[in-house]
Length: 187
Length: 65
Image (cartoon, rainbow over all chains, first blue to last red; front, side, top):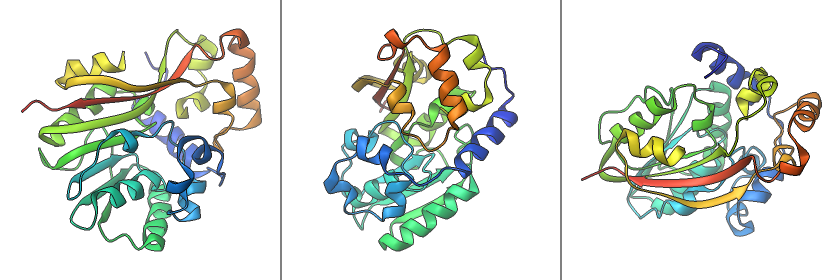
């Protein structure tokens, strides 16, 4: 159960991510140096995922990819490199400030096969079957309606399409004091 | 649980392809949380289970044909 409404949770999470400071500590833990060297430093310094789903997505040249919760764009940019100029990647995020950051990093990288959209993972603004692959990194755990978000991922994939989700999972219940803390919503 | 959620909404070939502990040192890397929150987490989570309670995973699946 959640102690927060959907709207309150979104506000808290957006406010937390808007205030994110630049740090390469997360990127250095998750990505290979050879990957990071190809990306704008700003995208590397705002990597806030929890794993590397793009590495496991087996992306092919020409594929259409949706990156849910793209943040400042690190996974979006890596996916765009993998699918090449004939492929297309859409980065979706609910926080306009993060999309602004991603827009700058994409321009800096000169990637012309990326589109950014504002929206919610529980109500994806795309027709059925729009994508070959959905990736997401540390985002599903932020939703108070995870099954709804997963059903939306399934809907926007073409038949046979793939999903690769990086996320945090619990092996035990957390102390109630932590679950009730608003800051913990953004973990 | 995440794999089960994917399966329940209709994904097939659901698999965990990466799984690693995500402990306090990992959380502290994120430039999202104030020091008082990190102190709070350290107080309420048992340190001897730091590498057990939270894991980072990549789960994959496929929409049926």
